[in-house]
Length: 182
Ligand SMILES: [Zn+2]
Image (cartoon, rainbow, N blue to C red; front, side):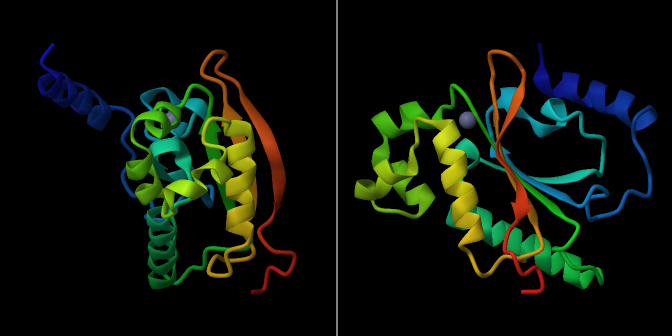
């Protein structure tokens, strides 16, 4: 299969059927999802997203790293530029998954992974790389501890099981900070 030709064909079908003109830049469900690049865990599939519903930031593992935080800051600045605010009424979902490639990466290229995550190699053990259930809780805690993020976000930690297709809520929805004004 010539992939590019195939994608152009699929895009032709998309532009003629599912495409919706006039979608807004900001997500209609006021939702930001942080997930992994793994092709099996696309939030569009896992959550049945329709065009325009959620902003999705993907990296290796769906981890909270410096680049993710920078992207979130930019999303927030875009919202402000649009006359909106990211915060109260918005969802922030951290979506990790089983059988993630970040685990073999830890074994074969720890320095590369540490650099990506913005930590020292000696600190990788604290991030529970090989355990998505523990890792998602660590990342939600990191978000809650970050004063740069809007406190009004309702943050949820979830793990998707690639063997069953089911998502489990590991960290139930809670405000990023009890005082959402900040
Ligand atoms: Zn992954």
